Length: 281
Image (tube, rainbow, N blue to C red; front, side, top):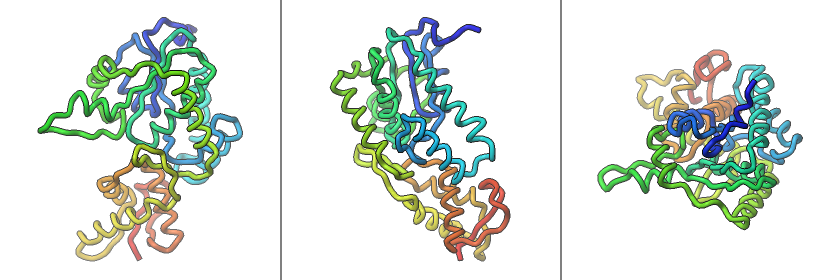
């Protein structure tokens, strides 16, 4: 079996998220190798994630709190995580590395984590901020877009961004600064991060609870009589008002927490967000 890491590539691109990686594969073509980190770093513990103990802590938290199929974390997530670490470690030292990021806590946290993982590698490492690059290249006075995630940008425009907005390789001092920022992040014990004022900020688990409750109230106000609403519908409503990036699985976890705290009544079995309904008490 041929090891595709050993093929000659123009560059290796790393991005947080498998959907982001899919968009890059379509946009950049076969001469570029794409590695998608199979994770969402805005949610869940990142304490000592560069060590085996930290990864186990994260696996356990995700398994115990988020509504994945019972065996997904062990059978899929852990395997993909480990495989991605191996791919990164196997990148040849002469190939340039480009990390894609955007204006969200997921990809910004990932940028720092990835640069720490690459700290022993001699490769030239650059990064592209999809959000700001898109604004510079495509926004006009009449039409302005703010894309929070790399995956939101069309593949052909990602190619244009790559051709026109690739940053110079990071200096040794810049890499050390990002590595130190990761160490600071990895010493924290929180499970929710947001991107605000160009910084990754840790917030409490209940940071989005008021938004969830307000979204439920908006939907109740549209009913002739207050009745149960699918949890998935409340999450969709919350997303239409949210200014930060957060996973739908985490919002669903918070709905279950609000049920336990007596804020919501429940009807159905909370196997997935589409299997049960809630209403405000």
